[in-house]
Amino acid sequence: MIKYIVLAVIIVCITLIACFWAARNEQGKSDEALVTKDMTIKKITSLDEGISELLSQNGMNCIGCPSAVSETLEQACTVHNTDCEKMLKIINDYLEKGSNNGD
Image (tube, rainbow, N blue to C red; front, top):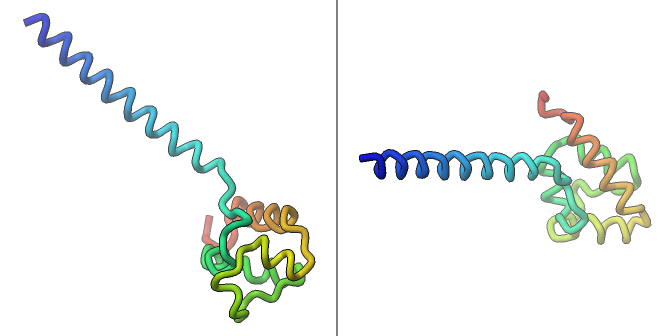
């Protein structure tokens, strides 16, 4: 009987550790940048309507541009002679602060 109790305790412990590990991994994902330079402009602008305004303020009028569907942020920054790392920081800071999503 003791063997079964020990086995049950071990199974419960393993399950709890697995749940803790999964939650920890999910928490780490939230620390990652929301936008990366290899994301398309269309994907980036679909995250929040205010991002189009940020791009526009930095000389990138991407709304309505046919290239926005397949062009990455890095490519668009190159075409518009804009610092990609600076643009990434501007966008990610905006999204982290809650943007217009009611956060």
